[in-house]
Image 1: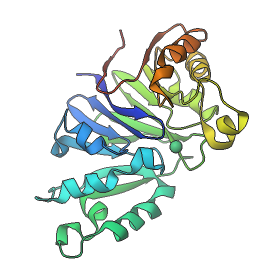
Image 2 (image 1 turned 90 degrees about the vertical axis):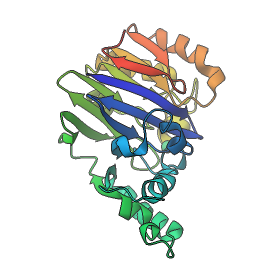
Image 3 (image 1 turned 60 degrees about the vertical axis):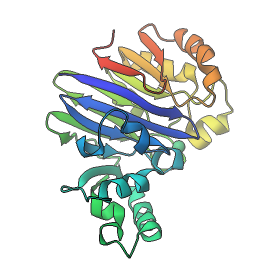
Length: 259
Ligand SMILES: [Zn+2]
C-alpha cells in the first residue's frame, strides 16, 4: 500500500527516469537514455501501467523509442501503454516513429503509435487526471526552454510532486504544496540569470526555498550537473529547508510517508 519512488537515473544532461509505485501499480516518469534497461531491474515492462514524460529534451525522453521497440518486439504488448506527454511533444513522437519505424516488421512500422495510447497534456489545464485507479496527476507549466510539465501525483494516502526541468516559477508552489515528497531539480550550485531563467533551471538553494514555501514535508534534490556537487547541494539546501532532505541516487528508494 502507499507510495514508493525508485530513482532510476538522475543526472542533468545525461539521463532521467523514476519509477513511481502506488498500491502495486507502476508508473514510469521520464525516459532518458538507459531508462528502459534501468526500469527492468525493478519491474518488467509488462507491469508498467503508464508513462509520463515531462519534456522533449533528450536526457528525459530519448529512450521512448527503445521503450516502444521493447514493448513490440518480439511479442507485441496486448494493451497499449498509456503515454502522457506535453501536447507540444506529439509532433516529435511522430517524427521518431517516421525515422525509426521498421517497415519490414508490422509491429514496428510505427513503434510508438503501435505500443502506446497517447494522452497529450495541456499544461494550463490543472484538472486532475486519474492515470491509474486511485492515483491522480495534475500538471502545471514549468519554466524551461521547451514546454515542461511539473507533476503532482496525489492519492488518498499521500502526494508526491516533481518539478521537471524548470527555473523559479510560482506554479511550482502549487505543484509541491503540502506534498509528502517534492522531487526537485537542483541543476546548479550557482548559475547566471541566463541559465536560471533564460534556459530554466534551479540551484539547490532555490529548490529548498521552494520546498519551504510550499510546505513540502520531504525534499529530494535531483538532476545535479555533477554528482560531486551533492554534499554542497545538501548543505546549501539545508540553510533554507528544515524538513526531510536527501539527494537522488540511482536505485535509491523512498516510501511515503517519508521518514
Ligand atoms: Zn530540459
